[in-house]
Image (cartoon, rainbow, N blue to C red; front, side):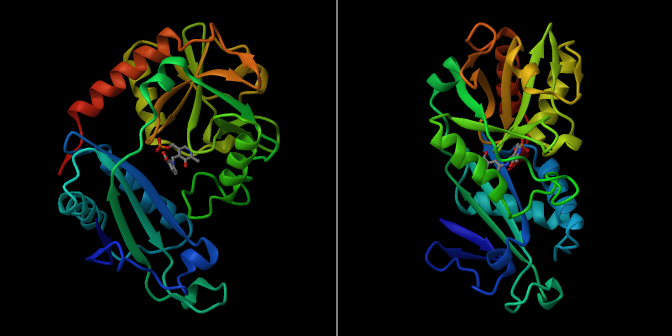
Length: 288
Ligand code: PXG
């Protein structure tokens, strides 16, 4: 595997960052998880836009243009002969001293890794997953806004540990007010009376690219989508529920906190969206 670091490619053994990089010392940096399907990078422009907005929000100036960043991603895929895969794009604050102050870091580092993707077995999509709400609340929007896709993922990791300990396949984070925010690395949707609902970003959700794609697909299909605050009651009483993310795509959720959702099987609307999402991955994206 060839890994891109600051304009050069390195073998796996030589692809290293400094122990003084503030990405490591403080989780000071931003990232993206992107997928390639059939020799195309899916939603590349959207991921690059989000990366630059995340960087802007933490006052990190990425030392290359968005166009050059897109070329670096495509080039990394080419060098690794990726047609279907997972791409991890990381921008760290760069090397500084042991102090917190980011102004000691002279140059952010850009890293791109393109490899194989570990997909969920088809059986998981056919039965749907069983998940739980966790006690760890989502980071406050006023403290560390979850809209920033930063290298500091401990809030999500703590939620994942709780879900693991409960024997569930993932966790749902509520915000400090008790409204639904999102799953550990996925947004959440419910379907009720042929209408779709997903939490607003102000509830502590990431501006998910799959979320946005699903909203577009739903509207094209004639199903209205709205973004009200949702409670656990709304989840429990939904007709259908699913999670969205680059890695898992559209994942049916059939059990929450031990309660069966809808019929207990992936619903009609969910299955229709899954089908149309797959069709989209076959036909669009930046050619490698
Ligand atoms: N919420 C959070 C907190 C995320 O980290 C999403 C939602 C979904 O966003 P996209 O743009 O992918 O639709 C994410 C996605 C993975 C993985 O394995 C995904 C993320 C981070 C780490 C791993 O899919 N981010």
